[in-house]
Length: 189
Ligand SMILES: Cc1cn([C@H]2C[C@H](O)[C@@H](COP(=O)(O)OP(=O)(O)O[C@H]3O[C@@H](C)C(=O)[C@@H](O)[C@H]3O)O2)c(=O)[nH]c1=O
Image 1 (cartoon, rainbow, N blue to C red):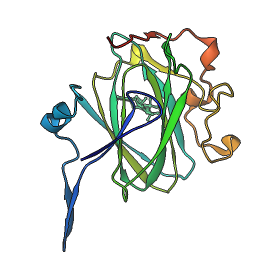
Image 2 (image 1 turned 180 degrees about the vertical axis):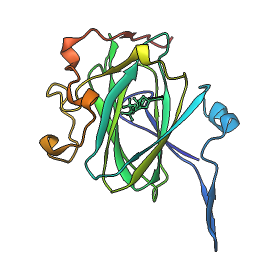
Image 3 (image 1 turned 120 degrees about the vertical axis):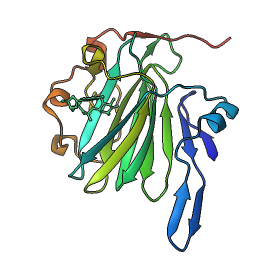
């Protein structure tokens, strides 16, 4: 498994090995022991899987508040997407900053997003499937969203934002500055 750091500490790109043969390939998409050896000790409890039919579908930017905050390990099961994490931990040196990574069936990359980050993605291919592990169960009362095209965050989604395919919830999400983030940065000793 290859591990790459991003410009946001804690947000990490993982690329598990693929064992190819005449049939195709085999890959361990999650191995808790190997992750622990790499210093990643997250206890995932729920797996999510969604399909987005159209290119330019945007889901996000989403979070779950404490006490049901979620870390996520995201991969693309089919197609291609651009996955984005935004640091919203109050007091963080990288508050408001974002990182985006291309995840596709072909490249097999996974993005690890810790608690305290917004998560969202845009699809780059039709019929794109995303699969992600979560460290807490879905808690609708803690579910929240920030506008994907918030000009202060200024994410380059690679699409015309006016043409994005959105849910009703995401279309009316607030700007980052319109709410107080429920996450507080905890500096590592
Ligand atoms: C997130 C979630 C939704 N649902 C239901 C609620 C609703 O009826 C339907 C669709 O929910 P949403 O519109 O929130 O789905 P979606 O817009 O795909 O939301 C997801 O977006 C990505 C970016 C994330 O990071 C996820 O945590 C989640 O917020 O599925 C669950 O049953 N369990 C879940 O864990």
